[in-house]
Image 1 (tube, rainbow, N blue to C red):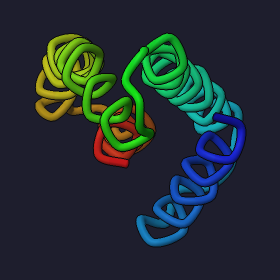
Image 2: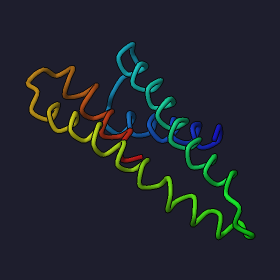
Image 3: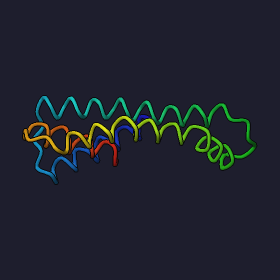
Image 4: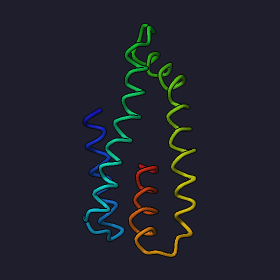
Length: 109
């Protein structure tokens, strides 16, 4: 879970570089939020894998994704995509750059 969260942050920092988004207080808040979201969702899948009673790791992974994967996916889709859609139409540059782009990056990564 820790490694996955670290990789997500590295990917977001790379995305910020590509989109020319500077590291400031607003983008740092988005990065902290990304850590929270990645830890939350990775830990749900990891817990489902751990408590599963299937005999092999592959079967436990399939079962964990079947039971928790849809909840994780729908949780991010319903809450974040609707907020991102609203922010897409914002006229303010701070909303467009620091919230729309970074939220989109968090959801896609």
